[in-house]
Length: 437
Image (tube, rainbow, N blue to C red; front, side):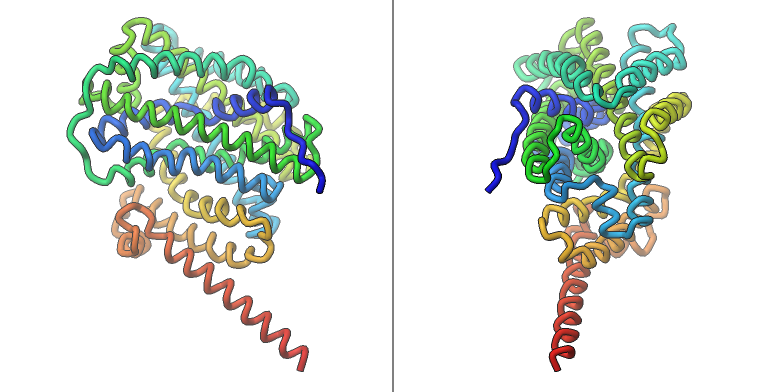
């Protein structure tokens, strides 16, 4: 048996740090604290729900790409056909470019720059932000090193400073418990889009491994497995700490809105130093996320078009789109993003879990049926966000087992996949017996 080749630990650490910081964006800074404050003494259950979607989801997505040795484009094409797979892949890429890029850039201004330098206009912050992002992403071969060796370590150091202070000298104790903490944790984790991003970033890392001369399927498998685990562990530790900070120190600011609460916690724990520290954390987390998204979009669209769309022009186009849409503002962007995320998440979960099976071709027709039904349930959740809460799909989902936890789609999808697989096996057996006769 051929021995698998693992990259040097230092290189693995750089790539893992780069992937952690690419995932750790504005959502991971604003959603866990407000989740912790709202859940009070049930913060640990909420943190578990958040981790199930955010960290475990990320790990499984990397694992899926590693097992299949394919990006989301390759996996989705095997399920939905070449055209369907490309359309399906294009949707989350465009979501990251049109929603997440402007979200992280406007958040940098509203939560990092404006509190310290209120005289700086939004367009100036966005211009500098995207020029730096473009500089980081412009040369594909150097993106990971720029993020993993320089930006990620600085981000981690400042997060640790804030976390240590909040753990050992919290401003207050967690308040009364709140209902459905597991469900609330999972719903908040949807907003980060990290599980979807991991399927996209998984392909990005596979391309990175090619650049570093890791070319065999077995070698890519083990390297991406290790990188995925380390990335997920870092995200899990960080989110749990931030949920706790929200439950404890965040309880001192019961009226603070989303985003503002994170700033108030930092200021309460470290004073003016906290504001500067939080501004640095916010800027670095958003900058690394933006650079990764821009580079990933260049990679993925180049792959999807067989090289007809070149990396550099896509990177420039994504940068311009992020700048223009960033002028909309953070609160409106968050509202636009959530419906599209809940539309995709059930089908993304089906794809991730199904792709963990090495012999994927044996079940791909069943997966196609499962993805189609998952998209239908996701559509019901999407309609609910637009005010159509009594739509028949959402009502059916709520009536299903696990429906109270937002997982009403799980059993129907599993049942449809099982019945599809059994019917295909039966048809194959009948066809085989007919030929023998």
